[in-house]
Amino acid sequence: MAATRRGFIGGAALAAAAAVAPGAAIAQPRASGKASGPFLLTTWDFGPGANEEGWPVLASGGSSLDAVERAINYVELLPDEYWVGYGGVPNEVGETTLDATMFWGPTHDFGGVGCLKRVKRAISVARKVMEETQHSLIVGDDATRFAARMGFAETSLTNLRSQEAWEKWAAKGVRTDAFDPEPFDKDRLRGHDTVGSIAVDAQGNLCVGCSTNGREFKIPGRVGDSPVPGAGAYGDQEVGGAVATGNGDVMMRFLPTYHTVELMRQGMPPHLAAQTALKRITDKGYKFGGGIAAIAVDGTHGGAQEGWDDAGFSYSVRRASGNEKIWVSPKPA
Image (cartoon, rainbow, N blue to C red; front, side, top):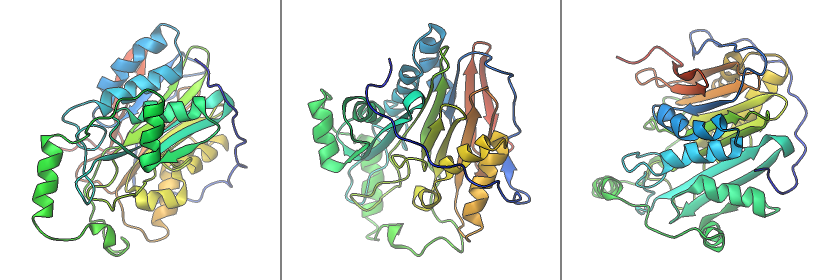
């Protein structure tokens, strides 16, 4: 199914990247040759399950839009996934809110929702913004009203795990760490898992999407990097796509997925492009945990991470030959 409205013109290509930071963790590139067939990439440990959910769409000749939506819906609806979708991290007042975005390569179209409340399938609402309106981003209670207008049911996003997590934190009587100083000395945030998916279908159409609950105990109304074009996700039909995860309050300031794709446009392999985009952030002195996974339209892929040395960062790629999980750094013990 093709997107139904206008696209927008992408920005000019960035200059070639600076040297890479020594010692940073990167996944080596994997080249698959030209147009080797459809593929679906999804981040983190839920990637294999999400890919298996979305792959039948591509295998039957369907659209990458449907494949990405189905893969991300799978993660959004997992009852025990704390960082994405239903039952996820609460904000400062105990409410779970969602951010999501979807890019459509052929028209360079985009739809996003931020601080969405009481609707489980945030990526599906983002798709409706993209396909049914001339807008690109709708946020907060108005995003929920839009979702209801599009036929989505409202329901609580809280489950026992998220409720207990908030009650335990609230009992401490401390304010959210969002008021802490900027992370120039060390990264104090807990790691978290934004789901990002990138697909190319049999017709060569690129789609990129991501969804998250964002930061734990965030200030109400906070919107992270996921629904910001070029921050949490970005794609270009002629180049490929990139998705990000990690400390979105820092990473969004640098549009790292846009940077990654533009470096790929200049001929840089995905793993090196991702690493260079992260280096741009650390060069400003930030200490943070974050990762980027990227894949070119020819199927060459790679990733990079900053921080998370004790946990690692992974993504998985599904092709007709099967699913492959890639650890960007050595798999933790």
